[in-house]
Image (cartoon, rainbow, N blue to C red; front, top):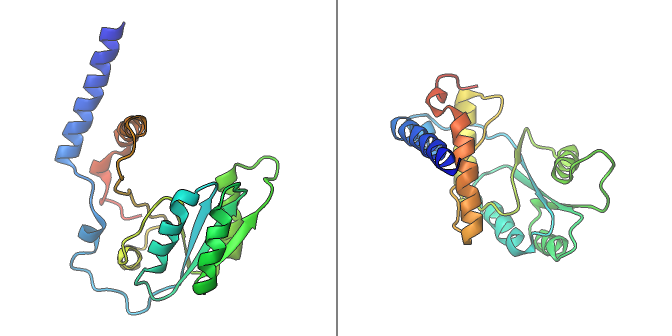
Amino acid sequence: MITLLGWLIFALWLRLSILMIGYPLPTLKQGIQGLSPPTDWPKISVLVPACNEAQDIEANLKSLLASHYPDLEIIAINDRSTDATGTLMEQLSQDHPRLKVHHIETLPPGWLGKNHALEAGAKKAQGDYLLMTDGDIFFAPDTLQDVMHYVAHHQPDHFCLFPEFIPGKFWENAFMCHFGILFLSQLQSWKLGKDPK
Protein backbone atom coordinates (compact mmCIF):
# COMPACT_ATOMS: atom_id res chain seq x y z
CA MET A 1 0.00 0.00 0.00
CA ILE A 2 2.77 2.48 0.93
CA THR A 3 4.67 1.59 -2.26
CA LEU A 4 1.56 2.30 -4.34
CA LEU A 5 1.05 5.63 -2.58
CA GLY A 6 4.69 6.52 -3.23
CA TRP A 7 4.33 5.79 -6.94
CA LEU A 8 1.14 7.87 -7.12
CA ILE A 9 2.89 10.84 -5.49
CA PHE A 10 5.84 10.42 -7.86
CA ALA A 11 3.50 10.29 -10.89
CA LEU A 12 1.75 13.49 -9.74
CA TRP A 13 5.10 15.21 -9.18
CA LEU A 14 6.32 14.12 -12.62
CA ARG A 15 3.16 15.36 -14.33
CA LEU A 16 3.43 18.74 -12.61
CA SER A 17 7.12 19.05 -13.37
CA ILE A 18 6.54 18.42 -17.08
CA LEU A 19 3.67 20.91 -17.17
CA MET A 20 5.60 23.58 -15.31
CA ILE A 21 8.69 23.18 -17.49
CA GLY A 22 6.64 23.28 -20.66
CA TYR A 23 4.23 25.96 -19.49
CA PRO A 24 5.80 28.21 -16.85
CA LEU A 25 3.48 30.60 -15.05
CA PRO A 26 3.59 34.08 -16.60
CA THR A 27 4.93 36.93 -14.49
CA LEU A 28 3.26 40.28 -14.08
CA LYS A 29 6.23 42.07 -15.68
CA GLN A 30 5.91 39.80 -18.73
CA GLY A 31 2.18 40.55 -18.89
CA ILE A 32 2.71 44.30 -19.27
CA GLN A 33 5.76 44.20 -21.48
CA GLY A 34 5.17 46.32 -24.60
CA LEU A 35 1.86 47.76 -23.33
CA SER A 36 1.50 51.50 -22.91
CA PRO A 37 0.53 52.52 -19.36
CA PRO A 38 -2.91 54.01 -18.75
CA THR A 39 -3.25 57.78 -18.87
CA ASP A 40 -5.78 57.78 -16.02
CA TRP A 41 -5.15 55.58 -12.96
CA PRO A 42 -8.40 54.41 -11.28
CA LYS A 43 -8.69 54.46 -7.49
CA ILE A 44 -7.80 51.19 -5.76
CA SER A 45 -9.11 50.18 -2.35
CA VAL A 46 -6.80 47.62 -0.74
CA LEU A 47 -8.54 45.47 1.89
CA VAL A 48 -6.25 43.93 4.50
CA PRO A 49 -8.07 41.66 6.97
CA ALA A 50 -5.90 40.54 9.88
CA CYS A 51 -6.54 38.43 12.96
CA ASN A 52 -3.65 38.18 15.44
CA GLU A 53 -1.02 39.12 12.87
CA ALA A 54 0.99 41.60 14.95
CA GLN A 55 4.20 39.92 13.78
CA ASP A 56 3.69 40.93 10.12
CA ILE A 57 0.96 43.57 9.89
CA GLU A 58 3.22 46.60 10.30
CA ALA A 59 5.59 45.46 7.52
CA ASN A 60 2.59 44.61 5.32
CA LEU A 61 0.96 48.00 5.73
CA LYS A 62 4.25 49.87 5.34
CA SER A 63 4.89 48.05 2.06
CA LEU A 64 1.47 49.15 0.80
CA LEU A 65 1.99 52.70 2.05
CA ALA A 66 5.29 52.82 0.13
CA SER A 67 3.46 52.02 -3.10
CA HIS A 68 4.05 54.32 -6.08
CA TYR A 69 0.39 54.00 -7.05
CA PRO A 70 -1.14 57.50 -7.33
CA ASP A 71 -4.74 56.95 -6.14
CA LEU A 72 -4.86 54.45 -3.31
CA GLU A 73 -6.79 53.87 -0.12
CA ILE A 74 -5.83 51.10 2.30
CA ILE A 75 -8.47 49.66 4.61
CA ALA A 76 -6.96 47.57 7.40
CA ILE A 77 -9.55 45.39 9.13
CA ASN A 78 -8.71 44.23 12.63
CA ASP A 79 -10.73 41.01 12.80
CA ARG A 80 -11.20 40.31 16.53
CA SER A 81 -7.45 40.23 17.27
CA THR A 82 -6.33 39.55 20.82
CA ASP A 83 -2.75 40.68 20.20
CA ALA A 84 -1.36 44.10 19.18
CA THR A 85 -2.63 43.93 15.57
CA GLY A 86 -5.27 46.63 16.02
CA THR A 87 -2.94 48.91 18.00
CA LEU A 88 -0.26 48.71 15.30
CA MET A 89 -2.84 49.52 12.63
CA GLU A 90 -4.05 52.57 14.56
CA GLN A 91 -0.52 53.84 15.18
CA LEU A 92 0.31 53.69 11.46
CA SER A 93 -2.97 55.36 10.48
CA GLN A 94 -2.10 58.45 12.55
CA ASP A 95 0.74 59.33 10.18
CA HIS A 96 -0.80 58.05 6.93
CA PRO A 97 -4.16 59.46 5.77
CA ARG A 98 -4.41 56.81 3.02
CA LEU A 99 -4.74 54.16 5.76
CA LYS A 100 -8.13 53.65 7.39
CA VAL A 101 -8.69 51.14 10.19
CA HIS A 102 -11.88 49.22 10.90
CA HIS A 103 -12.28 47.04 14.00
CA ILE A 104 -14.55 43.99 14.16
CA GLU A 105 -15.50 42.87 17.66
CA THR A 106 -17.86 39.96 16.96
CA LEU A 107 -18.45 37.45 14.19
CA PRO A 108 -22.09 37.17 13.09
CA PRO A 109 -23.57 33.65 12.91
CA GLY A 110 -23.02 31.87 9.61
CA TRP A 111 -19.90 33.87 8.64
CA LEU A 112 -16.26 32.85 8.36
CA GLY A 113 -13.88 35.43 9.85
CA LYS A 114 -11.94 36.50 6.77
CA ASN A 115 -15.03 36.57 4.54
CA HIS A 116 -16.85 38.77 7.04
CA ALA A 117 -13.84 41.07 7.41
CA LEU A 118 -13.57 41.49 3.64
CA GLU A 119 -17.31 42.20 3.41
CA ALA A 120 -16.99 44.86 6.11
CA GLY A 121 -14.00 46.43 4.35
CA ALA A 122 -15.72 46.37 0.95
CA LYS A 123 -18.65 48.33 2.40
CA LYS A 124 -16.24 51.11 3.44
CA ALA A 125 -14.24 51.10 0.20
CA GLN A 126 -14.48 54.04 -2.19
CA GLY A 127 -12.20 52.73 -4.93
CA ASP A 128 -13.08 51.73 -8.47
CA TYR A 129 -11.24 48.43 -7.86
CA LEU A 130 -10.90 46.22 -4.79
CA LEU A 131 -7.64 44.46 -4.04
CA MET A 132 -7.95 41.81 -1.33
CA THR A 133 -4.77 40.67 0.35
CA ASP A 134 -3.53 39.10 3.58
CA GLY A 135 -1.72 40.72 6.48
CA ASP A 136 1.45 38.73 5.83
CA ILE A 137 1.93 39.69 2.17
CA PHE A 138 4.58 42.29 1.36
CA PHE A 139 4.34 44.41 -1.80
CA ALA A 140 7.08 45.87 -3.97
CA PRO A 141 6.53 49.62 -4.57
CA ASP A 142 5.60 49.13 -8.25
CA THR A 143 3.30 46.10 -7.86
CA LEU A 144 -0.01 47.98 -7.82
CA GLN A 145 0.94 50.08 -10.84
CA ASP A 146 1.94 46.94 -12.72
CA VAL A 147 -1.38 45.29 -11.80
CA MET A 148 -3.46 48.23 -13.00
CA HIS A 149 -1.29 48.55 -16.10
CA TYR A 150 -2.26 44.96 -16.96
CA VAL A 151 -5.92 45.40 -15.93
CA ALA A 152 -6.34 48.59 -17.99
CA HIS A 153 -5.21 46.77 -21.13
CA HIS A 154 -6.88 43.35 -20.68
CA GLN A 155 -9.98 44.29 -18.62
CA PRO A 156 -10.21 40.96 -16.74
CA ASP A 157 -13.24 40.24 -14.56
CA HIS A 158 -11.02 38.92 -11.78
CA PHE A 159 -7.24 39.05 -11.45
CA CYS A 160 -5.06 36.97 -9.09
CA LEU A 161 -1.36 37.08 -8.33
CA PHE A 162 0.65 34.17 -6.98
CA PRO A 163 3.18 35.52 -4.47
CA GLU A 164 6.79 34.55 -4.02
CA PHE A 165 6.99 32.65 -0.72
CA ILE A 166 9.44 33.50 2.04
CA PRO A 167 10.75 30.20 3.46
CA GLY A 168 9.56 29.36 6.96
CA LYS A 169 10.06 26.43 9.32
CA PHE A 170 10.22 22.83 8.11
CA TRP A 171 6.55 21.87 8.58
CA GLU A 172 5.32 25.17 7.16
CA ASN A 173 7.49 24.64 4.07
CA ALA A 174 6.30 21.03 3.77
CA PHE A 175 2.66 22.16 3.93
CA MET A 176 3.23 24.91 1.35
CA CYS A 177 4.92 22.43 -1.02
CA HIS A 178 2.03 20.00 -0.64
CA PHE A 179 -0.55 22.77 -1.10
CA GLY A 180 1.35 24.08 -4.12
CA ILE A 181 1.41 20.67 -5.78
CA LEU A 182 -2.33 20.22 -5.28
CA PHE A 183 -3.08 23.78 -6.43
CA LEU A 184 -0.88 23.63 -9.52
CA SER A 185 -2.21 20.21 -10.49
CA GLN A 186 -5.62 21.83 -11.04
CA LEU A 187 -4.46 25.22 -12.38
CA GLN A 188 -4.00 24.12 -16.00
CA SER A 189 -1.35 26.79 -16.58
CA TRP A 190 -1.20 25.97 -20.29
CA LYS A 191 -4.62 27.67 -20.64
CA LEU A 192 -3.41 30.94 -19.11
CA GLY A 193 -3.19 33.75 -21.62
CA LYS A 194 -5.65 32.24 -24.10
CA ASP A 195 -8.59 34.04 -22.51
CA PRO A 196 -7.68 37.27 -20.70
CA LYS A 197 -10.91 37.15 -18.70
